[in-house]
Image (cartoon, rainbow, N blue to C red):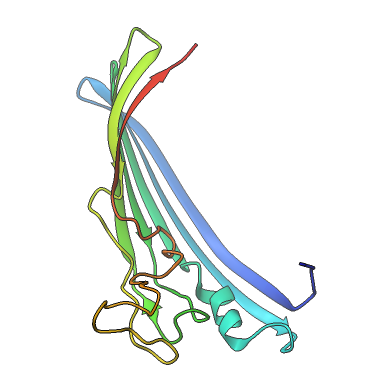
Length: 180
């Protein structure tokens, strides 16, 4: 059974900055977008019988306060290349890994495509192509990492949610798309 309760109040402030520019480069067209986001959430009031101090820390710091993306796409006739560079600031998961601050990370995505016959596109690409992982779970108060496995008793080595970009590392693909 689940039900809603008025357990806490939050206040979030932040800023989003986005800049986009398109221009001709050689025989093709280059598009660029740079985006930055800063958010700060605070728990302004809470019921201690409903929410713990660890959960308050998670509400305030589980999502990184800083986030940035650089997107570059180049189009030349039927050829397209898209590059995404993603930045994730530090974050915490106090409820599961008390006392650990997970460091900021960069991930890179790349997609190369070629369009045949106006409606058929073939592509190869990858997400997180440089195989970035979140920090490993550290020995801290309330968390025991076993030296035999370098993980928790259940085998966890990385945070179970993977943080803001997951814990699976690189993902590569081949795609064939048809538009009708």
